Length: 458
Image (cartoon, rainbow, N blue to C red; front, side, top):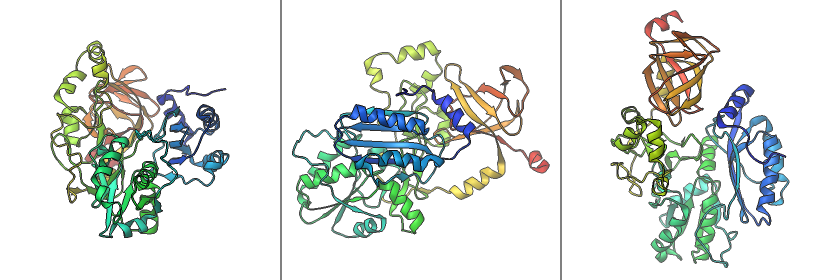
């Protein structure tokens, strides 16, 4: 009986591509009393593994929190596995606006003390005594009320790229930090103000709304389904979006665009930008905002120190990662003195720029042709591996590697190894490797930049 992953991310990505099936990225949560979280966890793994459902799921005595990728043709079967439990009957599934077959590449279900860490040890606190749920238009209407205070219960790196107009955006790194801060800030408004709150999918506000009712706030409301459901209603029902910018998401995409407004800056140069990335130095892995120009100049690194580190021999890089102090730096969320234009909790009143997504897509479409997909990156030797699926590629060709985290990176291929052998040209079906000065991901696509002569031949 299989209860854990047996495939690597690379192997899983290859199987997904070979299957050629559309997948849905979705999320859901439920607060409930679960007597035996370990038993519950194992039952879910067996059921979901059989459906090729993937994702990151936390279960605890207080409920379940899940972000997942499910084959579209197994969606109803997946829903049936939820309906088998009384507390998940009729549960709302937040389906992402943007889909990516590689949003999750493993099925990871972990047992935690709580599904949302809150730092609370109050046995009288009832998490089920929650605030009033509002749909998108209802949320907009209350947002316009002058007696409303709206609070973003997400972290600083989330609100920085997108938030509701007029929202309080605490400069916090986790949910439990925000509760006492907001409680102290709003002590004088318990009786006469509407406390309106939101988060990504609703799970944090579900607990926050109950917490503030427990603290004596009278008029507590929350956005039903969070920003994810709000974006769906905006798109499908024609509701005006009062959310500006991007919604940060916790899969490899790192963001879904809700409006074309760019409200953030590149943390290195200050240019309008809202694309998150992780530092290429594995001993740092800092999450920060980086524009394409800085990505190219800094080779996807957050600082000159990290840039120097990735060029050291592999053995020296590994040695620099040792020690508890270094380990505590890994997976930091945008807190670094090297980031000169980081503005957590101090967000602009209006957008800094517009993302011209339609024109950009059309421009790129007219200049490039998809030729392959990323399969692996050998960080020690800085070698990328791709499978060529359409149109040959040769030494001297200008190519573009594109992906949600990698961004858009152009360069000229200087040497190619096709199926392990040095070659001037690689054909369809060849597995190729070549040197790349930055990390690639499994979701990255390889394009050939078409010159004028190529356009004439087509």
